[in-house]
Image 1: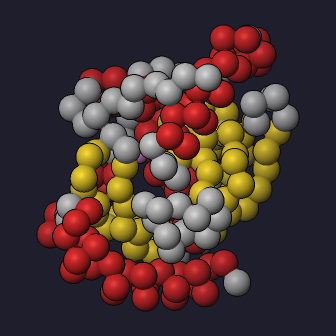
Image 2: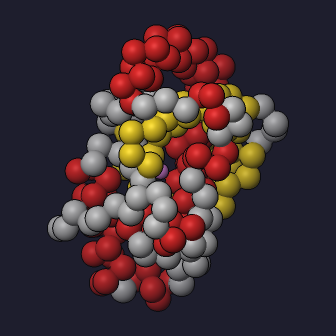
Length: 191
Ligand code: NI
């Protein structure tokens, strides 16, 4: 397996809308090897997720995994999930505030409103349909990754630019308050 280079904000390929993956393309050894490398790259960088567009491949594939993530210690765990051609549909209008960061946006976090509940339709790496409902921080992570497949970054969605913080200043000035708020999000959507 190979750790791929993660493109950084400003790279035009991050702004490309990724294309639908056909069943033949998904079965291809090259695509399967690419998915392995995407997982490896996400784990290597301690990401909660990684989209194909972030490594310059314009296909609608993203991987998500949260396992006691050091970047986001308040996030509940998510088992390894590969989403191919994901479609997200909000359930209701309820939103929460997510203090997001991104492997393609070095040393910056900002508050983004995200839907609290979603219906997810996709296929997994074997082409098996996925149909599930996700909520809370998990729903936030899904929305962040699918945004990447549409050429969007979390910085596009930050409503108040005053919430931008480096990771150090987040830790120093915003973490305690956000971790407290995160508990209310978990209670509201995930219990
Ligand atoms: Ni990202």
